[in-house]
Image (tube, rainbow, N blue to C red; front, side, top):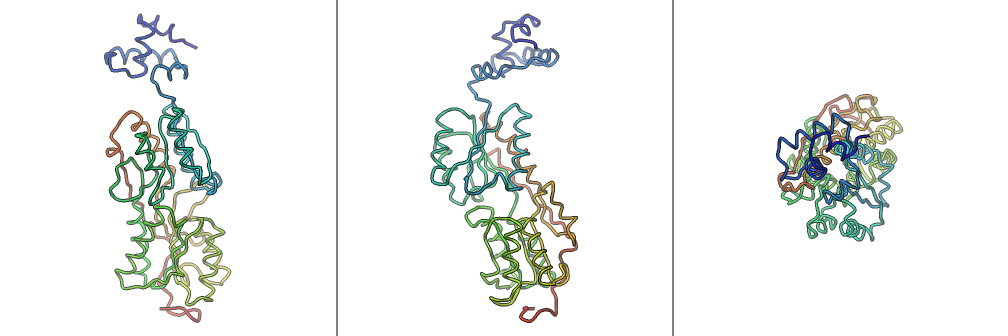
Length: 350
């Protein structure tokens, strides 16, 4: 393997000049820098990570801390996001350090990461409406990016989907199909994106003069098991008329609703309509559901890749206000949605 000294000898430059060129120091001229980079690639030079850290003052690592109680490492949504993030960082020769901590110790762990200098930046995932992690990082002036956002006008870098627009479009589709009894199976109530989706759902129904009872809205882990449990309870009619449509925050929840519908001997697409948000999980293809599932679609892996690029930019000093990106989810209509039933089980509202 070519060493720094050998590369410098080949170019007829000092090792210090070559090191500065490789690490982007401004005092090295552009022509020299390009010459050094081309030679390093041609000779397959690989910088020693410790030497690079000494030269740049950077660790070459980015941190992520999550609540241990959320069990995110077994959550397919988080795992796919992590795959995109880690790949995006690895492509830029940056390592991702993942740490779990209990809720009451979360901020202390953030403080330790920031104070130790062990990482150059932090990735914040699943932000809450009043997220103290974000406030702490802003106070410390430490580079970070957020998967999601806590409001409309924020001063930090983020990548997010337009949750409000997605769930307004999905709700409007169901209303246009004649549904008035619509249930929302949402995520955990303290998460910002959950609140954004619920606000859009409530606004869309209110604007059309539709009252949604509180029993038609659930907050829980976005899993097939919880989707089945909540749908089974709502479809039982024990607490009042059953919904004719479900809007789910995850395709996993939708799987549970489909199972509950089968148990209740209801046909999805005619007796019951279902829409879910599709994060494009690799082993869960809504177009292969029976029937094919109507979705709002946005790949969560893409968010991870985008945040990796943003993180590198923040570490380099780019203004966080220039690193705010919100994408629109696609509404894809399939066979799981149909006109509201005009007749059905006793107790249904029409």
